[in-house]
Length: 126
Image 1 (cartoon, rainbow, N blue to C red):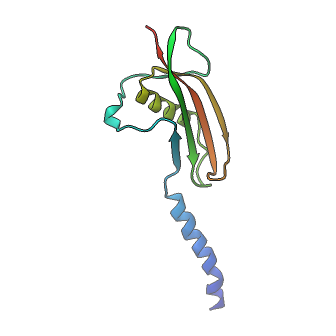
Image 2 (cartoon, helix red, strand yellow; image 1 turned 90 degrees about the vertical axis):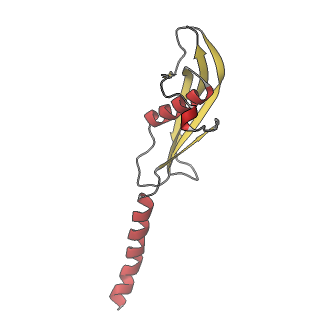
Image 3 (tube, rainbow, N blue to C red; image 1 turned 90 degrees about the horizontal axis):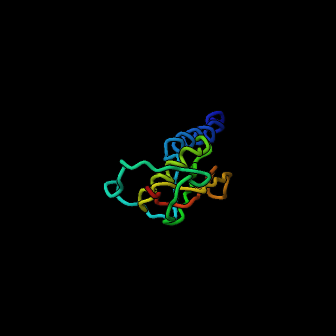
């Protein structure tokens, strides 16, 4: 009987770990509220640039996103995931590009890892 009681904490840890690894892996936060998918055009291509474009543009507004992993068992969020989130938010505000993009990453008090990306949403001149 003593042998079975010693295995109980290990069993609980295994069940908890399995349950947590099946949960959502990432959370995305942004300064731009989400809109229903049907309201956002998926046909337009949005550029993501760390610099500035070689043509004129009009600034629409800042775009900030944060991708956070929710468990220690998942891979760290990537620059590509941050870029996807920037593109999604750029479409919401009608931007053709996100310029002057910067990235920061690390661990936080409420997440096992994150990547933040911010830039300026712009409308490119033709």
